[in-house]
Length: 239
Image (tube, rainbow, N blue to C red; front, side, top):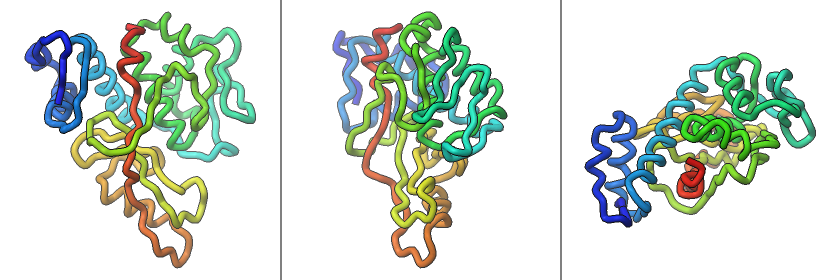
């Protein structure tokens, strides 16, 4: 359910985009209390979640390749490869570098955690002022769980199926460690985006991971009971 602390109504958001309306409906039907200062804060979250879904679909359709870190690549014009990830070159703007991932995807290859980070960065960039973004995320380093603290990414127990959330499908009997699981963006009812697997249903995600198990594996892949999402309230202050 949605709680607006200023006593306003969500009726003012009913004319939003179809994706934002879908997200709004999911929040309203949830048994969890989602509290917002006012309608503007709620509208901000809807917009960011909308962009997360859109940017996930863009990356799915892009030329970016799934790769482990040793085999990965980022456009060297913007990025320097280090032991801990790709560091933005001095003098380069984080906003330009993040846009480049989506505009010149053929120059990039990375794994699923990095995909989520890139989708989050791009979605934040799409919804706050560019100069704020550049100040917030400079210096910038990207790979896996290496990212700027101002990302405000949080993970907690439970699943609420709100479009734009990120869920993890664990693969306990993996053969190659790169496939020990898949971080996936929940796009809409029974539709998930996982880099390297694509946009698939819940069952197809599990079936895909089960083909990547060691010989004679006995344990099926499964969705972990946890949710990762941005702390939208913390990000809202940057608008």
